[in-house]
Length: 501
Ligand code: NAD
Image (cartoon, rainbow, N blue to C red; front, side):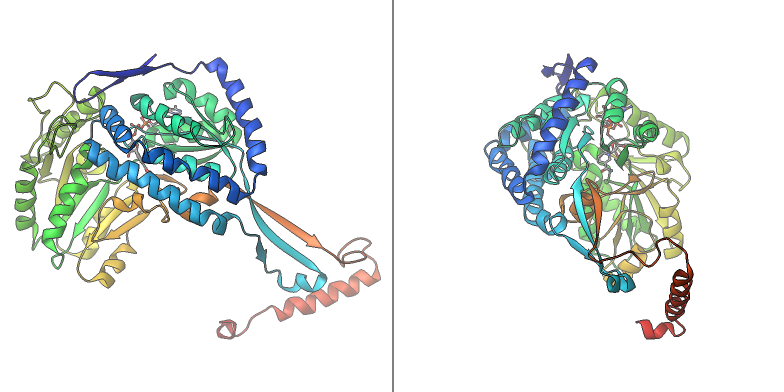
């Protein structure tokens, strides 16, 4: 059995039976059978059936939010805003956009070949069985949106939640069981990723993985054996850059939320803060003061801002990283230790200053409530510091001059750059989500997310009579045709490029 423990109280939330490896063949067989039937339904009918999840979810907003809170350690209100609301909104967005994105035949212009009665269209067909492997930190919102996109496109899904959040996984399954889609279109399996993972990768047509970079690399390595497609949504070390002309009051509040929401266990949370030297002291003084005002506590109690860390291993890792930072010369401005007032896994909101860009605490993902703060003077200097990192998920630029903000954004190598915002674009489901470098491969959400769960099918038509000009035999007529092709090819040499545009 897999035990679900409340990280704030250490109480047992419940247990779920681990999936037997021997059962996987049957699970995949059923998934493939269901997918074939499902894919035959018109896209708009599939979408109409799927949108019903919003009705099912709306009857249990509080129950779902509480369950997330009990497994992850975040306040239920935060779980609602950042996860449950996000799912309902994205399902609606996908419902209204899927036909436009995937449902239309796209005519491909063929130029000269059109004069030979040829035509091409592009269609989008489902991939088959997609395996969604989820992380613990947003156990509802992340896999749910990936499942919705996959099944709307006509795939079936086998979903494996994190072992820390099996009850939320079970809840997701229950929601799909309560809408009118064929049995086995969504199936949930439970187990330690290192035991069950390879079998899933070997049998699936695609893996959509969200989790740490080290696990993502293992998955890609395994998937190479079968050339199974992968979308990898991995770790991050997002930077927030504040220029002197920014709205400092808003920026300080954004930094506080962006660092500490979900106890810093957010792939896109603000993990590095780069402050211009002109505002460094005032900004930091205010941020430290506001951080000290945060109420850490049992997340289900009233007015708690910051809850627990998911498990003891992660808590110890956070503590170890802070100690490494201090050994390297970092100064703790607030926090810096496990919160002694709780038996659960609480780490105090922590800010580290006097760090340099090459330190481990600046370079590596800590995945806890820990911020590192750096100073810069020149824009090129800060761009170099931000880009000099293995991760490339998100970043933010703070300035009232949005044109200048965009100029900086275009120099930064991350999947998303926010101007005067932090973290939240995961909630904007029409926009692409994903990173560069060690933050992953591919995109989820929006149009690009839909394209990741389909195979493009190019269909080419010909309605001419008789053979094509280039077919055998290569006789004298053929030599004349070759000469004519040379004339056509010469007409394609553009001497004055300006004429073309
Ligand atoms: P993790 O890598 O430990 O686990 C993620 C999932 O992978 C779990 O379901 C786990 O059981 C499974 N798994 C583990 N080993 C496996 C294997 N060999 N084969 C297949 N599956 C395996 O990650 P986590 O601790 O749950 O999540 C935290 C990490 O996820 C952080 O690095 C965070 O930045 C990242 N994350 C990224 C995004 C994003 O969108 N880029 C979103 C959320 C979290």
